[in-house]
Amino acid sequence: MARVVPEGVRVPDPDHVRVPRDDLGFVQDIDPAGAVEAASRHLPRLVDERGEELRSPRRRPRADVPVGARPLSTR
Image (cartoon, rainbow, N blue to C red):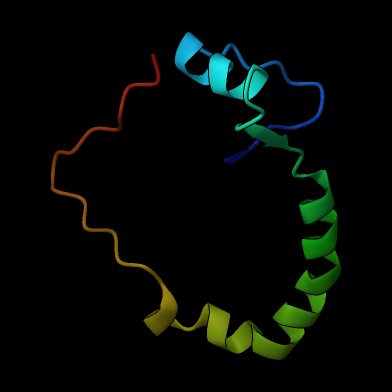
């Protein structure tokens, strides 16, 4: 199993993650830096080729948020 963890970031894993990671090599940390770099090379071309479609009101996700809803706590 892979998870996105930037290089140098220590994740305080609980035992049920630490054992498969350390003892079995089952959990792999993948640094997103390479993917960000690769995506950023393609983004200008994507915007040039499909920018109008990306800006189309039909493509915008609808926010189905009930009236009076509050954001989730970040505590």
